[in-house]
Image (cartoon, rainbow, N blue to C red; front, top):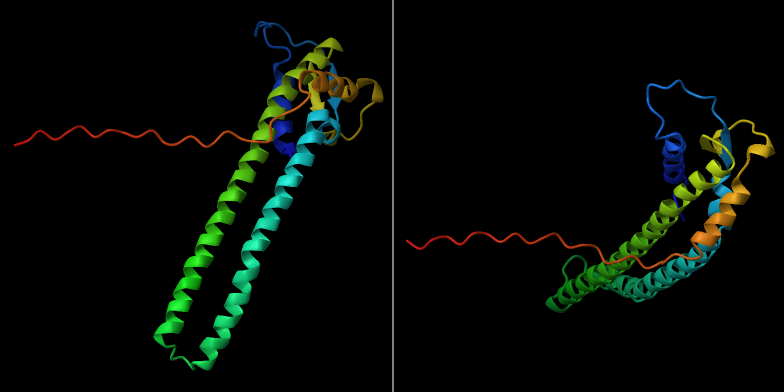
Length: 202
């Protein structure tokens, strides 16, 4: 699920920007700090729970596909190793063809697994992106409503009073504004094709 360090970095920027709009020449006012339990938000928010469940299903499907591809290949590899050992380093043409066919099949299976794994990783990253994009302004909103000028992550703080913890408010607002996220990332963009100018005929 979402990379907490990425979220924390975004929150740090958000906290620094809460006082934006004040002239730089003005004296700094006393900071009022709000604390957010980011781990709890990422664990309990409605969209996070649903996305985690769906991503886990995708991961299980990926693992099952890899096992389905690998099991027959493992059996065939064992058979080939036995045949090669019996050939004493002098495989005939038929055995050589079996080895080449096996290598082609194994490469194809690995390619399919890699493609599915890359799709899964894009889905995970897409979920992180959606939650982070919404979570940062929600933290800003709740912090400002509580009169805070800085918002920090709870796991970066040695001690904080419960009165400055705005996690519950962040969860409520995030659930309202982001009830769900998509766990299917858009296809990767293909690099733009550059058209080479035609060479004038001589």
